Structures are given as structure tokens and as C-alpha cells.
Length: 116
Image 1 (spheres, rainbow, N blue to C red):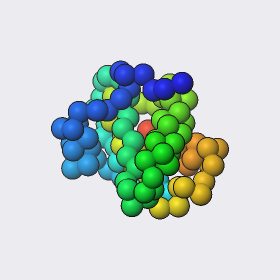
Image 2: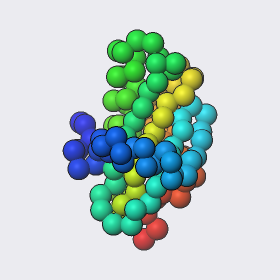
Image 3: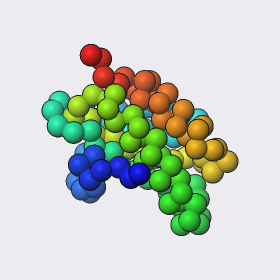
Image 4: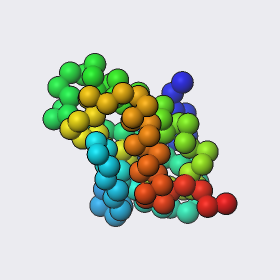
């Protein structure tokens, strides 16, 4: 199941804002850039550079895996956060469970989980 449209960060200006103004948390094979906006839906973008995976098939598989792991976690995240997940070298050798665990770890590390 895919991430819903209301939770996708798609506008180039929004992504640029996250990179310029946002904070970062780094894991073994993922980087998370994020900005807390206050109100509104959680918005997420994923990036897999060609330096990580030359094949578009591999890049798209990684993107789908990352988006699915985020979709499961959306309900437990603070409202209004804008997140960009960037894959890094080493992610190709990881399985779906390891990617999901890394995303959960980075959400906690960045303190993006809901505090209620």
C-alpha cells in the first residue's frame, strides 16, 4: 500500500526548505532531514541518488520500501513535520525489516514521534 497524497512532500520549494532550514539525523544507511511546522499533516519525501543505486529498478524498490515503512509510522509522528529521507550507500544490501528498523530508530533519534 502506498503513502497517501496528503502525506507526500512533493513541491520542490518545500523540499528545498527542509534542506536549508531543517535539522538532520543520520543512521547507518539513511539520512533524515526534517522541519517541524506545527500544524498540518506529516509530509514525507524519499530520495535515492544514482550514486547509491545505478539501476532505476533498485532505486524504485528502495523508495517503495522506505515509503511503506514510513506509512506504518505516520500515525505515531508529530503533526506538521516535513521529512526528507535520503538513502545512502549500503542500503542496497539491507532487507525490508532492516530499513524499517532504521526508519523507526531515526524517527526516535530526531524526536519526531508523538509525545502524547
